[in-house]
Length: 73
Image (cartoon, rainbow, N blue to C red; front, side):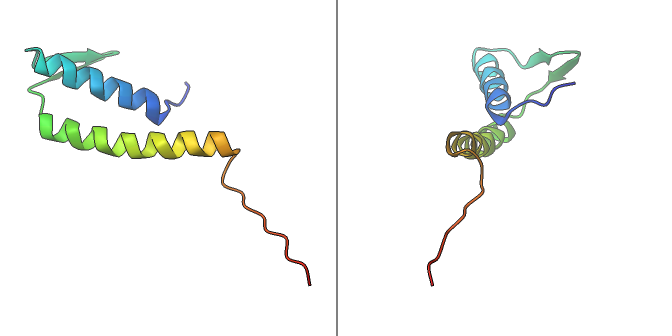
């Protein structure tokens, strides 16, 4: 089992929002089906995953969170 990245989760949430806005109140992710979607909850998830995906991209671009500062005496 592989772990999903926040970018992948963000894509799924946006797909769900698009489907609901186009008239569908139920959708399917893998073997799970969801009905009576709550748009405010999906919008909150979208905001959260946007922040986490940005952090994820920044961490990969900078090579991680390790920060070393050399100080001369």
